[in-house]
Structures are given as C-alpha cells and as structure tokens.
Image 1: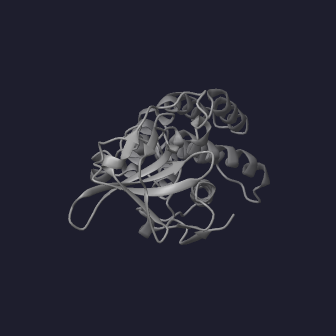
Image 2: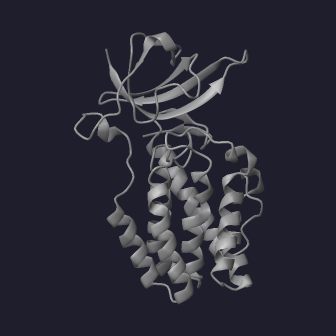
Amino acid sequence: MEEYIVVSRSNGTTRRGDPFCTLKLKNEKEEINVAVWDVRPEDEPKIGQLVCFSTIDDKDGKKSARRMDMMPGLMPNEQHPLYHLLPRPIKREEWDRCLRQLMDLCSDEQLKACIEKYGELFFKPYSGRPAATSIHHAFPGGLLNHTYQMLHMLEGLYPCLPYPIKLEHCVIAILFHDYGKVYEYKPEGDTLPDKYLLGHIFISANRLYGDLKERGIDETTIKQIVHIVLAHHGELEYGSPVKPCSQEAVIVNMLDNLSAKTDVVEHTGNMEKSLALGTCVVK
C-alpha cells in the first residue's frame, strides 16, 4: 500500500450538497490529485499529514476515493523519507539577514524602526500560516516564505531600478500586504469567517493605517504606504479595491505576482492544468 504526504488540500461540496476534499499527494515516485468523497472540512488528513489508500479509482485520468478507503496517518518528523517533499518555512536567520540588508539601503530612520518592529512581530505568526488554501504557498509557513520571497526579490531589484523609489514604503507594504491572512486561515489551512466577512486586504490596510498613525507617521506617507497594500492584487477583478497608481505599488504588485505564479508552476505537475495560470504546466 502506497504512503503519501498531503502537500495541499481544498474542500468543496457536490451538487447534492455532499462534502468532499481534493488532495494533492506526493511520495518519492509520483505526485497525484485525488478527490475523496464524504470528507468534511474538519476531517483528516491535514496538510503535511501522511495518508494511505486501500483503493483509488481512476476514470479517464481523474482519481477519486471513498472516505472509508482512506487511512490518515501521523505528521512525519524530519527523519521520515517523505518529510522533505512538503515545503517548509524558511529559517529565522534568512529572514533577519534579508531585512537587515534592506534596512541598510533605507534612509528614513522612523520608517526603518517600523520595518525592524514588523519583521520581529510577524515572523512567528507568518511561519505558522499558509498564504492560500490551494493556489500558491499552500502549506503551514507558506505565508512567511511568500513574504520573504518578495522581500528578497526587492533586495536584488532595487539597485537595478531605472527610477527612484521610496524603498521603505515597499518594504513595509510587503511585510503587511498579506497580514490579514493570519485571520483568514488556521495553520492547517482551514478558512476562518474573517476571510469572507472582511478579507485580508481590508484587515491588512486597516491595521497598518492605525499602527502608522499611532507611531506619528505623517498622513501623506501613511496614505502612500497603505495604497500599496490596497493595490497589491493589481486589478479590481482580482480583489484590489484600487489599482496601483505609484511606482512602489506597481513594483509590489509585480513581486506579489512573481512569487505566487512561480510557486504555482513549481508545485504543478508536468502537463497538469493550472487554473491560476489558465493553461497546462510543461516541465
């Protein structure tokens, strides 16, 4: 009987209202997607958990199984051969090094103090939350890795930019852009009510506006930084309440897209259809 590790999970309901989940599974030999019927959102397995199946049906390449045929296992430790197949959050030293490097390029001491504070404050909660349930960085700690990737790319991009930008604004906005996802997802990826009641963009922008105001940052600067957070999805149809209208907002939107879409390609199988990309991935 094959053993797999769950690398992503999405929950749904059939037309009749019956619950199911779709699992992306990996082992050393293959990566497969399996729809498992009669599994509720609160049922095992969670992302990162081991699982076996007594039977997996395959109809025209679409794999499915019944709940009774599934046997959830343990959360593997670092010695387990499948442990390394699930992405893990980056180490604290990598996060700190990147932020120090960016702060060395900044000149506004008041905003540098904000960057230092947020970098310290967000490491722990971000390292325990996914950035999404299935599209990109959908694993515990994915929120940290996604944020780090954007900061690390900005670190390399900034010296090459042909136009001057307010680097501090970009760094603070990146640190905050998905802050609201801490209130949208549980560590295992289950969604929370605030995902639908408020949404992460509002939560992030609202918290950032209030925090910068409390720290005595001038109103114009606050609006410029909060705008970047509000516009980071780029298009109104993608959930942005506003479109990017500054150099900094355009750059952060592009970095967000680059981090998300390259992660989609990395974790989509060869010739597998990606809804996020609107095409199949070829490797």
